Image 1 (cartoon, rainbow, N blue to C red):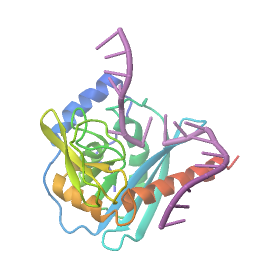
Image 2: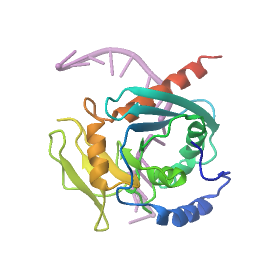
Image 3: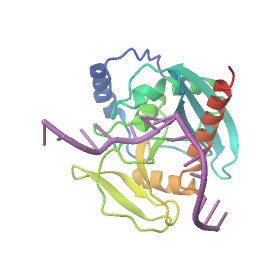
Length: 228
DNA sequence: GCGACAG
DNA sequence: ATCTTGTCGC
């Protein structure tokens, strides 16, 4: 799986903002996909005493949630952490990881926001547009928006609103546990994205895709740092 | 002006 | 994200 084009990511903040403005118009907000058999989770970890980033992609069988493939890749930090420009920090290692992937996931769940973003172009949207694949943004905390409160039972949902626009859903994946924030990335509707995330979270707060990718990335980082 | 601010 | 111990609970 290869990106449409090579990105050098030698960008200033201003250039990154301009790129978001240019790409945000390419986001497709409704369901455009066939049967989803493979679902992937992506995550990135940061080395504690270097500028190294490690990305992992784990592909799961969408029906059984069994792991089909795992890949990791690393890159140097080349963009500071700026809320709203998160994708420019985590995309470089992720793109390298995608180049190693043998399977083509039918849907990708990201660890961060998608449409629920100041300029409606979070990491999930950026990744989706670059690879032209359906993506979902799934955050543990909220970057933007307000909501009235969400029921305590698994499956309860409340719309996340910003500037009178529904930008995502607050979803309770487990009864009595803090909710997560779901938004579309690309080529999927918010309702379908929400249903998928709930389906992918049968036992824990976070979807299995994210949990597996998180586990993989931590494991890789642990091995590399104990290597000297 | 002050605080908030995905990971 | 990362830095960090014990501790409460299933």
